[in-house]
Amino acid sequence: MRLRRGHLLILIALLPLYFTFINPRIPVSARQTVLTVLKPFLQVGNVVSRTCLGTRDTVIRFWNSFQNQTYTEKQIAALKADLIYYEETRLENQRLKQLLQFKDTVSGKNIAARLLGWDLSPWRKTAILDKGALDGIRKDMTIIVPEGLVGRVIEVSPSTARVISLLDSESRVSVTAATSRAQGVISGNGTNSLEMEYLNLDSGVEVGEDVISSGTSSLFPKGIAIGKIVSLSQSNDGLHMKADVEPFVRFSKLEEVLCLESYPEK
Amino acid sequence: MSRILPGKVIVYLLLLYVMDLAVVSIFRIGEIKPVLLYMLVLYSAFQMDWKTLLPVVCIAGLLRDLISLQTFGIETSSLVLGTVLLDLLVQKLERGIWILRVFIAFLFCTAVLVLNLILSNFFNQEPGFSWHVLLTILATAFYTACLLPVFFYVSARWFGDRKAIKQYELFG
Image (cartoon, rainbow over all chains, first blue to last red; front, side):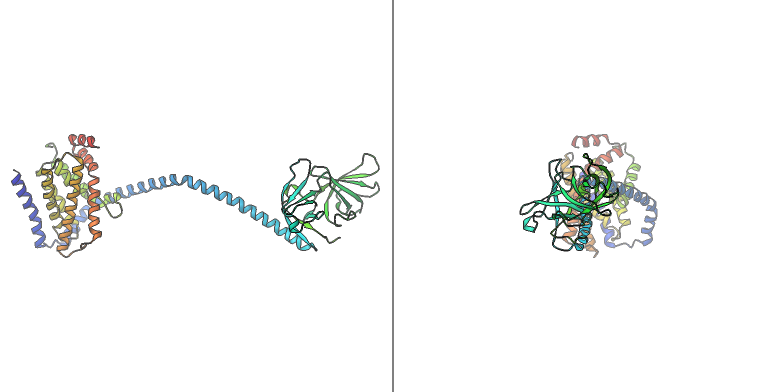
């Protein structure tokens, strides 16, 4: 049985081999006919194939997305951080440009400095600058921004300086009402507003007037804008008038300042 | 096995033929894809009697020849010669061991493809002998052999061969 089977197999193997060697010319039309017959089946097969490939690709894409989710989230967080940084830089650039333009209008020696921070004490309004004696900062230098007077330097270390702002309760500045020329002294009270004291009863000062430095104390140059009078009242002793002044400088948003040695007096 | 209708085999053979042409590319790894008709020949050798095996081999070879651009008969010749080797191995070796089945499948596929290559080159046709072609042959044979257990399981379901399914499950 096995012998017959083996013989048969070899015979069957030799038969197509023989045909191959005599190289029968199979007409092209025969192949075309086969393909024509097969075409609908191949089309169905192709649809199945494409559907399977599409599904496979979808699964792969889904899996890749799933795998990349953590990475993408990290990337989004990093980009958000970058965005915040760029926005900060843009705003800083805007402020510095403004300061630079202002600096050009100010004659004499002046030094731009950055505010590092405010005093930790809640009732003191002193600030720390990033420039010190090594940068040319000296005690009693006037600190200004484009909006107006900020304060003066009270302490200098080699690389930092401490500034007392107008808002500090120990700050005193001789001032003049811009229109009525009424003289007075402005002081801080620890809040975000200023108090103008020692105004003569007949000074003719009015609400809405601008207040500028008078220059009489020699600590501050004359003519630096300080604020606007928002209300007037009599002092407790009844001998003087006092005014509440809203400062032009927004102290809570201060970031860069200019330290002056001299200021063109108005 | 006697319950299997020849019609069922023919339909399965034609289905695999169409799948070989149009569907099997979804299992492609690089340029390598399995050959389903070779798997059917292997299934016939392992699970059916040789009287079924012979027509399966001849029809599979002829169908491949009909669509091939090679000299007519090369596919059939190489497939039948490979089947002679396969039959010898199946008779000599323990056919129930799966690792042996896979190994035999690898040898059979390699033999058929190498014979195909030799005959093609004998008639001065492409692709010629090169390392790339030989590696492709080995990779195709390996891939086809690796998919054999799955094919056996599916085929056993198709033919309602419970014994084969149980055997597959034992080794699966």
